[in-house]
Structure formats: C-alpha cells, structure tokens
Amino acid sequence: MGKTIIISNRLPVQLQISNGEITAIPSVGGLATGMKSVHSGGDSLWIGWSGLTDEEIPDELAPKIDKALKEHGSSKVNLTSSEVDGFYFGFSNRTIWPLFHYFLEYSEFELKNWDIYKKVNQKFADAILEAADDDDTIWVHDYQLMLVPQMVREKKPDISIGFFLHIPFPSFEIFRTLPWREKILEGLLGSDLIGFHTYDYERHFLSSVRRLLGLDVSFNDIYMDDRVIKVDSFPMGIDYKKFNEAAKENKKNQPENQSELQRRLNKHKDADKEAKFFLSIDRLDYTKGIAKRLYAFEYFLNKYPQYKEKVRLIILAVPSRSNVPQYQLLKREIDELVGRINGEFSTVSWTPIWYFYRSMPFENLIDLYTSCDIAWLTPIRDGMNLVAKEYIATRTDQTGVLILSEMAGSANEMNEAMLVNPNNFEQTADALKEAITMPKEEQRERNSILQKRLERYNVEKWANDFMDSLLDQKGKDFSHVAR
Ligand code: ADQ
Image 1: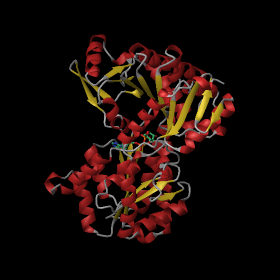
Image 2 (image 1 turned 180 degrees about the horizontal axis):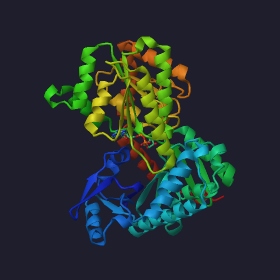
Image 3 (image 1 turned 30 degrees about the vertical axis):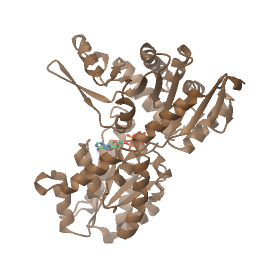
Image 4 (image 1 turned 90 degrees about the vertical axis):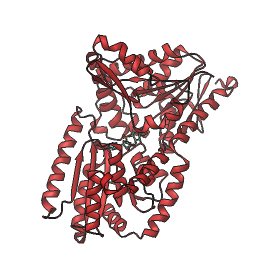
C-alpha cells in the first residue's frame, strides 16, 4: 500500500516570517487535530495553501519555506493574491458557502470567479499528480476543492480518492440554482467515496445526482460508467481526551496559576452563587446566528426580568473572512446590538453581555467551557458544530446545559441537549429559563450519555472510519456492474 495524501485549502501549519527566518507552527484547528492519526502515522503528505500569496513570499525565502513545510510532512500550492481573491474569497466564500448554508440571497454567481475556482482546483490537482503514485490514497477536503477528485481521476483512473464535505450539502431546490451545478457534481464524482457529516446531507446529494445527472443510484451507491461511487455519512468527532484532560487540569489550577479570565469568572461566581453564565462561541459568520442570539437574549431579559443582574452572556466571536462585505456588515450589526442591549439593561454592578471579538488561546477556551453553566450554540445552519461537542467534553463533573440549534449537524447525535429552533425567540427564551432551573441530577443524566458517545466516536475514529471505508470501496470488484 502506498502513502496517504491529504488535500485541503489550508495547510495544518501557520508560517511565520521573522528576520529572514521561517517558522512553521502546527495549527490547533479541528481538521488539523482530526487528521493527526492519519497524517502523523507514517507515510503521508499534506498538500494545501500556506496562507501566504506569491507576492508575500520573497524569492530568497521560497526554498526555506518549502524546507520548513517538509519537516511537517506538508507541501504548498502557490497562489497569487488575485487567485486567492477569486477562488477563496470569491467563489468559495461568496458563492458556495452562502448557497450551501441556504443563504441564497447572499450567493453571487460570477463567471470570473468560477473560472478562477476551476484554475485553482487544477493547481491543487496538479500538485497531487506530481506527488502521487498509483497505489496512494488521496483524501480531499471541503467545498473549496470540489473539482479536484475528477481532475485527478482523469489522469490517474485507478487511484483511490475520498472526498469529505465539512459543510451542509443543500437540498436539490437550493443546489439547482447554481449555474455550474453539473460541473460540481461531476467533480465530486471523481471520488470513490464521498462523505458527509449527516444522513440528510447525503440524501440531498444523492437526490441532486439523480435529478441533475440522471445517474443510477441504489441506496448509497452511484453507478457511473464502470465505476461505483459510495456516499456515506461520517459525523466528525473531537479529540475528546484532549478537552476532557485540559478541563481536569484547569480545575486543579491554584489562584496564582489561573488566567485573568478564570479569576474574574470565579470571582463573579463566588460573589453570587445564583449567577449564571451563558456561553456563545463561533467564528463571526452569518450562518452562526450570533445576531439572532442577541435578539433572543433581549427578548429573554424582557420576558423574564427576574433574571436581570443574575445572568451574563459571554460572546466570543472569532474574526473571519473580514474582507467579504457580508462579514463586515455583520460585524457592524453585532457591535451595535451588543452596545444597544448593554446600554439598555446595564446597571452599575452588572453588564449583561461580555463581548470578545478575537481568537483566544486554548487555555482560555477551556476557562470559558469549564466556567459557563450554559452553552448557547444556535447556528442558523451549520455542517456539524464542534464547539457543542467540546463544551460537553470539558464538563468533568457532568453538570452544565447545552442549548443547541436543530440546524446544526451535531444535533443529530446530541439529542440529550436542549434542541431549539434558532428563529423561535419564545422557545429559546423558555429553554434558557429551563436551563437555569434544570436540576443538577438531570444535567448529569443528559451529559453522561453525551459524554460516552463523544468519547467513543472521537475524531480519530472518524478519520479511521473514513479511511477504512475508502480502502474497502477500492478493494471491491465492480467489473460486473458496468451499466
Ligand atoms: P467552523 O465553521 O469553523 O467549521 P466549528 O465546527 O464550530 O465551526 O469549529 C470551530 C473550531 O474553532 C472549534 O474547534 C473551536 O474550538 C475553535 N474556536 C472557536 N472559537 C474560538 C476562539 N475564539 N479561539 C480559538 N478557537 C476557537 C467547519 C464547519 C462546521 C464543522 C467543522 C468541522 O462550518 O460545521 O463542524 O468545519 O467539519
């Protein structure tokens, strides 16, 4: 068996240039962690964009960058700034991202960006073809690279290719509006295995394949020429142990070792034993429903005024895609909403919303997870939502309440959470009240079931299941199925 080649838009390392020297720092993001068992296990290569455009890399530094990346089993695809604009900010994030999250009105159908998307996908495919042997296994990730499987298949018809989509696949009625819909499906069908987070996304995809390409579909197999493509769901998990153990360590921290954040949170909790912290953590993205959450919070404070001065909402919003206009507008809307609600309800001793617009180090993320009584995660649409899983993993005494949107992929596996429709403020306000008053015994009952499930189906199992299924698919003999 050959090596494994992983391909994603971004490499799992961050490059830092200082005084002509290059440092490559491993990323801590979900995908990077998730793929650890596949990538660090031995013979593997990760291909992706480094995050620096060609214009930002001085000629003399290019070999140093390649060397630093090689030490992390990585190899970069070179992109110019106009390619990043058209491919990443353009087609990926202004066409596919909104469309696949049902924000049809935000989707821009620009021929120029589509052309750049094709061109850049070909660059990624060429980088694979240059590195791949026939017995290698290729795993392509996410919506930025949907044409890559077919581009590789054309040149290497027998190589094993898997594709995983990290965002929802929308219903046929939404998907059909895309001018290049057939091309996207054909691109994906270059794979042997196509994975989604949930059964619903899988069904939507199969329905589009049947209706737009007229292909034969039986259960989760697609018949195309002399190939059979398997479609399946693989709900992504988290590194459960990492979060659980970090939380245990966090609890042991003596005051002198605690972060400023942890000390402040503890101080407030000590001062008022009935005080409750609600936690909201997301990238600042319109799909995550942050603005709706703020309106729902205002509605809650008006409907249940007895909780004024008792509850606090901590919002951690990570800056994201800030040169896409919709994200700039959203940032302004959230800034204004936070200001208005705080202005309306604050007292001399109480500020209802603590708003952080930044990324936080892992330790502070754990401070928040372990200190907040209620995690309030209500995206309008979300492929999975790993934050919900991380929160539960850190609840070492099994208390804590998770209020989760029905529209998050994770809701399918987290039935013991309080599931709400993010557009229903009344239901959400009532859920907040119920969460505040939920007996500890009930919290433990719900969380112990969730924890067992998350511990068993962790991110390593997710990656291994996908790889096993891909190997299994490649090992099958389909010579008799040509239709
Ligand atoms: P995202 O949209 O980025 O991912 P999510 O699944 O919640 O959403 O993952 C976010 C990750 O970032 C989490 O691991 C979290 O710990 C981390 N994070 C969040 N806020 C942070 C902060 N302030 N500082 C530091 N780290 C922070 C996409 C899809 C999701 C899907 C994932 C994985 O949109 O639906 O679950 O991919 O497939």
